[in-house]
Image (tube, rainbow, N blue to C red; front, top):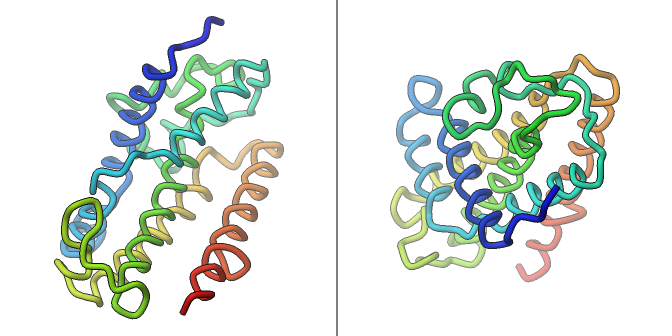
Length: 205
């Protein structure tokens, strides 16, 4: 397996993440339009996608090391359904998951979950009760555009969506996959919670 130029990998991974995020974020009638619009306003605010790209890079590195058996983890046709299928979502969902030709597809739910948690943290960090920032990435922050209430709800929604992704993809029918999934849920929950990100945010208040 030959090494892909770094710039090519970064561009490819960023496109994959953006396409997946566009599919997974809920839209009406699944949620109120204003909440959907607010979440998308922040998620697609022009970030570098560094965190999800690093997640995909880790998956790529593990695959190149030869650790490709992950059990029955066909993201495209499991409980997340259409969210990770379709154009740009990777190889056909019916492919042999034991030697998936597109390992990044299997890592997309985790990559997107990391980005949603990051975005939710920025939304709440910008609130008047926190840092009271009015600009982020060159445009008005979410609470300036939608108000504090919707900004809080949009952040809460992204946080919940992140753990929904982690809990539902890939499928739960393989014991080893389930064990790994629970480990990932614990690690991310711990890092994002009061002993991690939330605790760090409280220090300067």
